[in-house]
Length: 484
Image (cartoon, rainbow, N blue to C red; front, side, top):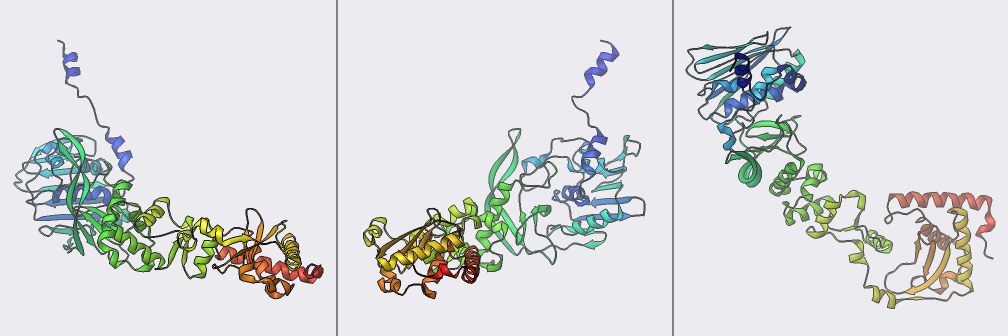
């Protein structure tokens, strides 16, 4: 076997292009890269302090992270991409990819990792060398980074927002970041990732979730064991006390995971949500999730819409009756499909037709067509003239009698049918001829020519338009307002 063949056999399957890693990670936020070094320190149970120092000398930034832990179990972890790690089998530890420190080293100009017994130097010329040290405790990582003063400043601010454990003294540029007592803690079952039988797999596991109230102008964040992951739309910082399934950059959880989490948070905090915050996006997502308890969904309905609320129905008369009875009418476009389903199934929300429409057979028995007399025909002719002039439509006019619902007239925009209820109006109403009262009812019904769910804003605008046209019509075509 010649020397060339031997060298080929010794080549590994893969090689890492540091320049390529730098291109991929160089544009990431400084805190997202820096947090990985702190995360490594906090994963060591023996650590009692972790110092984070980041400065800028006008040319480059210097980042130093140091702890007093046991040091790297394997010094080669400092430069081995995706090396095996005991942390993958521990849901209560943050590490899994064995990648984070390599990402921040890749974007640096040079770096030194010093751990127990060994110093690894990543030189500016791209070479790596190792030296023996007398260090017997802890790890110190020092990097020279091409970061701007602004990026340094932003990173310092964000690194002060970590939630360090009670037993670790964590400082940023000499300033102690104190342990924060959770506002509320609860237990639930969430998805996590673990190494089992030689493979990483997702599984469900009970865990503690801690809620913290954000400080002033401090955006709510999702945390994994005190390490920030991403900004979330929530009323609280949410710290999950086990591994969170997320992307390799560890800066985003799955949308479905967040929805489950929002549901669990809402179950614990619904009593504290003020009415003016009940329509926030995270609550709407939580309502869509089956984890949100039925009694919580009902409270969301009450806080958002009040006690008297119905869903818009295809039965316009039912919608109008609901409005007249001072019910809040919820339009379809105000809710997502899943929200609407949950509100109906467990939130006690009903359609207007469920409350304000009777049995169809009974309704048919109570309603009958009425043959018009001459007075009624004259009002019908008057209504047709107004419809043609005001909404540019040939309408049909019918008469019926239906006791008990108090409806004087209705207008079906689809068929263009105006219906007068004799049971409510009485025959004498038609005898009076053209009056303000007869005109008002006709104009009101013509206001429904442009469809609206009930007597909402769109209907009121339509009615104002029709009324305005009627005034101009009276000025320029007064004969329309005369009985034939």
